[in-house]
Length: 102
Image (cartoon, helix red, strand yellow):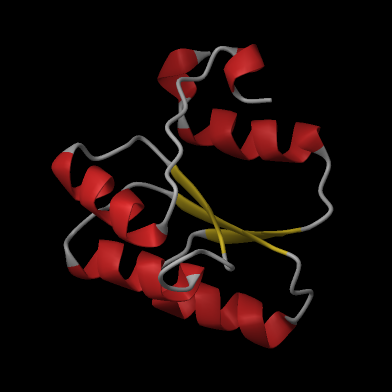
């Protein structure tokens, strides 16, 4: 869905690979799920922030829990988007953080 809107997208098979790639070449934004192979999304965002990655991070999750949303923000996520979600909402979030691409 993002590529069809003109965004360049990289995806990874597990959290460790994503972490290494993000630290090697920092992305403009990070979209991640809570349920990842290798570590949770909370662990990944915390590790990204601990390494100084400052780009916006959107956590996508099926967990509809305000306590989880608070944990995600405390770990370093900028926002949480619950599943199922409207594609337009995701596109708006990404577009708002990349105004130079509009």
